[in-house]
Image (tube, rainbow, N blue to C red; front, side):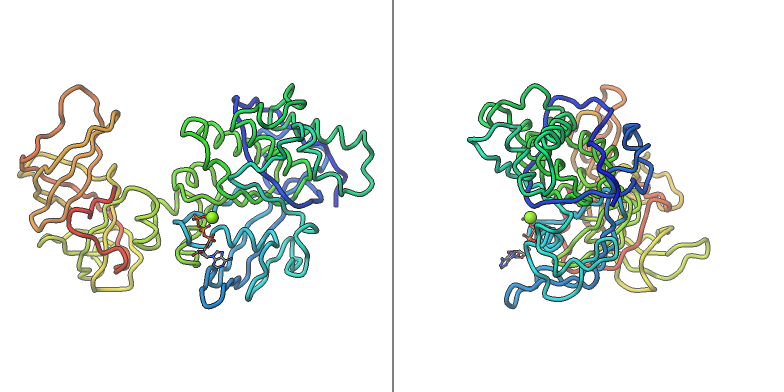
Length: 420
Ligand SMILES: Nc1ncnc2c1ncn2[C@@H]1O[C@H](COP(=O)(O)OP(=O)(O)OP(=O)(O)O)[C@@H](O)[C@H]1O
Ligand SMILES: [Mg+2]
């Protein structure tokens, strides 16, 4: 365990804030990865350090119900790792298992190689920040932050005051230490809660939808703040969200969860551009998912698939061979060209409808067999790019087409093929 170094950061924060904390924590060693804009004090004097987490066959059952169904995950020291998935997929349960608020039904949780399962929550170097602030209303900002330090042995009053001051500076709440929570904005209250978690210097911070209660603009600002802060302090963040954009923009890596399972793990770009299956493609944002027949491997590489009587080539895929499958293409990769043009992966279609989205227009093209494909067209001038009812040629470039195993759960009515 390294000597304690006060929490410090260099980058200015925008005016707003973050979350709620429980538990106690210890500190240790040096950051394991480049800390970006980390303050010199942290870089030069082995201070806060992120812990490495391993979940091995982690399972949690509530009676007959399986909430976490055997998860295997490794989260590197100092990583910003997100658990992403729809409501009820087991994100909070996974965090609660790591925090020690729930006992696993099977499997183990290792922190820097040590099994935590028998360690009570207050002895784990892990803190949790929740969506609700849960600050003590009768205590000042300073006293709320200092609350967790009460049980820390061997800390003098002066040390405690200094640590609280450091945490306040870290979340940019200078000058507000004497206020009560009711005298703060929602964003500021969340910062108090975050400071309350950070003052204990955990090696792992668990964050459960900490920005969920904030309006869109504040949320965006805080996303940026949180990632900068995480880089600065070097603590491992395990961040739970059901917002795919949030997970994609903030994380070093993310796990997409589905009914207690991990469907895919990887860096945001990889998971977005190379989804392992249709569930991940669908959950990670706007994707056209179309049912096709895989004919076999294409001589030029990739797969030959049949869609609406036309043979297309998809350069990448996660299938084993011929059969029913899905193809996925992002709306920003599909193109619309003049009717009658021919070439590889060109299909005849009809403009169905247009939705103006500001910088882009969403153009829905209907194929002869009824499927629709959504295309994003940049609004580079004032003209309407296409008119409903016009015949066009749809181009699905082969390097943008990916074949995925068919997923019955995602069978949709024709019109919803272009997911929104
Ligand atoms: N104590 C409990 N007893 C019984 N079932 C539970 C318990 N806690 C959670 N569950 C169930 O486990 C499943 C996963 O819950 P969890 O809270 O982990 O979901 P989540 O992914 O965090 O969802 P959300 O995005 O809505 O917060 C849900 O179906 C939930 O009802
Ligand atoms: Mg939850």
